[in-house]
View 1 (cartoon, rainbow, N blue to C red):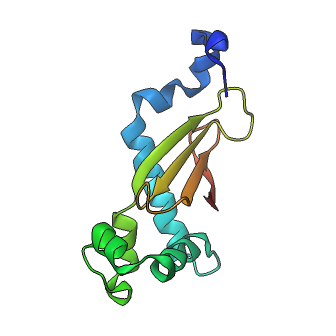
View 2: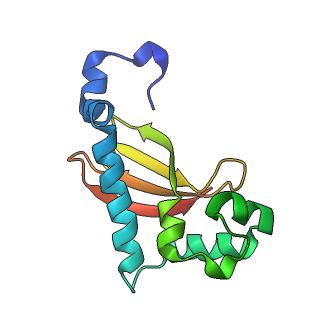
Length: 130
């Protein structure tokens, strides 16, 4: 991360696309989340879903998903309720230039699904973080 006294146009150039095309990167991140969920050998997204469906109380389930019955929340419904929570930009990083964090709700969980992008704007990592 850059501090305010380090912010220059030259230093921000490597991440400028994230400012101009936030919606495109959001779509790429959501596609990466869906792709990982459909991949049977990966379990990050499934673990995120299962954890929350086990831990959330009925009022929280109702608020997030419109039902208080965790068993009726499908993966598709769950993923459709993810909200872009935070965008971290790392213009000097050689590995990940941006990380987009998704949550089902601030105040409901401290856990996010974090999608990392490389310097070419491709999703390269997905992790559950707190």
